[in-house]
Image (cartoon, rainbow, N blue to C red; front, side, top):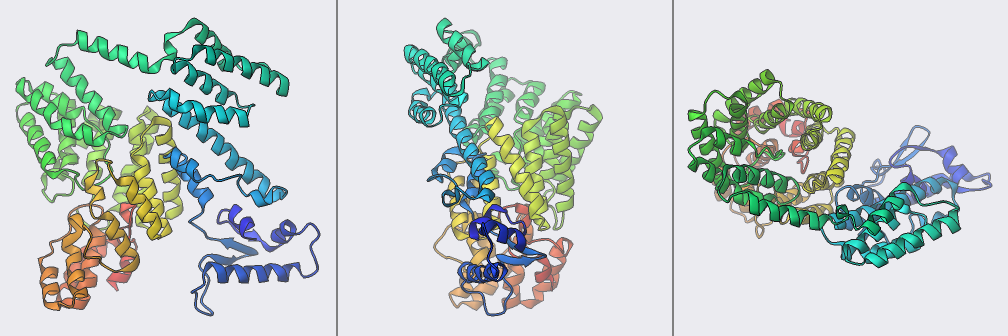
Length: 577
């Protein structure tokens, strides 16, 4: 019964279907037996549910039952396989639904999951090859083709891995073995990819050695492009942008200010504008990772704007950069720069420029509570714009923005679809940081401390301290409402401090801390932190409640913090009441 309901993936399974699936020859009391199974499962799944309380997991709906599970290893595998293949494969301990090999209702799901796993093994091998780790890929691929000899992609990858490991003869042997196996077992000749690979191996085609190609290109670049030249400076910023998008965010940020400083030394505002504006890395979190660096970039952009010739596109990029880097602040300059950048971009008709400007608008869309509809509209336009003009990173940004904005209003099915779309694009285009946000989103859905701890592990070392610091304890507080004084609350400490002092029995100090806490920053945690202040004020100083209520009232109907897509603190309406 449990397996049958899980395979339905939260959909209703009519009682008649359950009877047909659970018995080859249903007995007279089959419907009553199903009802007994449901009652037993409910006791197991929700042991602490009070008598007569409505079940939350195994629910009766219409003609049957639905299991509203969230923490299912098979589903976690599907999620991870688009963002973290090694973690996904680590979940696999044998055939899916192995106890139900002979059950027709399990056949399609078993086959689908098995195929996903085989594709994941091959994609992991391809990633290793592309990153120059061919020898590391060989053992797993060897086992893969032994167990699944009909998969031509496995043979191709194994031969390529052997060739790139310096084992040309072994690569040819594998290709000939593949030819023999396919002919003997399936009566087929190798497909065009295998035939082409065999010809390329025999010809020692340079295209087969991706790591060698990169090394040779880098050597030629170093010989021909002068150190300290304008061309080298601009191409370096392009490299930093690529580095940030593909997982090296911290390294890119570490060198970004140096590149801008070097550009300013040329005394050419147009060059400086190109160097600053070329770093159009999509940003999803409305709190700065490095406020000091952000202020340096803004100052350089403002100096350049003051002396820049009439180059509208360059001006637009500088203004969008100002809007991005001033995120989370309450200066009117940020929203003004965002609006001007968007207006310029629309007048110029440049899709890439408009996408960058819309990112700036998004960064300035948390200046008050209840602005998730505005963010949803920005996300919708970015998806359409990015899809139409092949701006992959901005398409992903649009999906993440909509994940957040739909989460804000509790529309988790829509948010989940955007998470899946973002993961799929990230897997295709090697954008690993995307999985950090989708993993946190799924942890928020599960409302599980374990899931939050796992999500926090994904954040470590990503170069996003603005997201990482204090987020895990805040997420755990949202579940238990217990504030741990021993952990690093990061930037959220002022709003948690009253609770820490209350737990310590010091109401007077807690009241002082409540009064000392400022209005929350203009970021995606605004509603969450304001509702924290409401909770503290109810216990410590109710005179503050009218002002706090006015702040958060525009978010009526939303989840407190749901717009972050990472953590929420119940419904805003509950706090308003």
